[in-house]
Image (cartoon, rainbow, N blue to C red; front, top):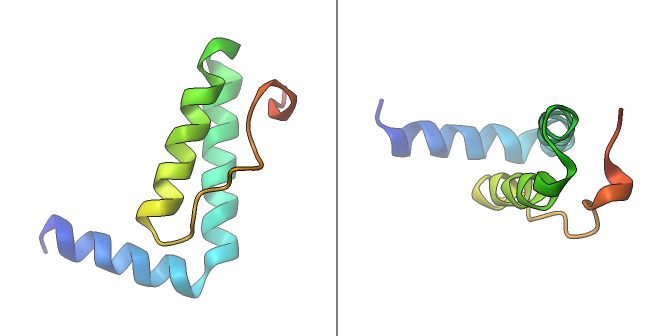
Length: 71
């Protein structure tokens, strides 16, 4: 299985379980934001949006910034 096959499989699973995929991406970005300085929050959010875009879920432009950080 090559990278393209794995990516297509991930897209299929994410499409079937989009709520769970979005929750996983949100949990991952929140964990990274908890462990990094606030100055990187924008970049972490951009990475989460890129993951959503790559999986065909669409970027979440309403999330992000300082008010979203959980401690």
